[in-house]
Length: 73
View 1 (cartoon, rainbow, N blue to C red):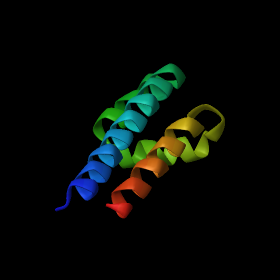
View 2: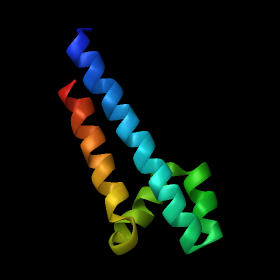
View 3: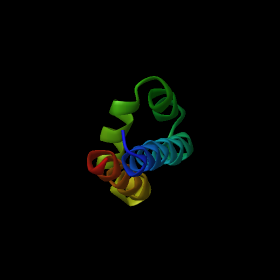
View 4: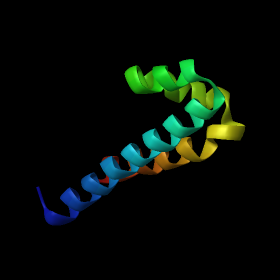
């Protein structure tokens, strides 16, 4: 793996982690059950974020940036 590819992959994973933490904060503020789902079932929490774009839109945007960086790697 080249250095540029490894850097892009690292930044992509970091973006996904940041988006999950932002989504975790938003979900806990909304309802404790969504907070628990975010901890134990992260893919389900992204479906929640799609349903609540007004509150969790930035988490989805950061996740998209992370996936783009990973695919570019």
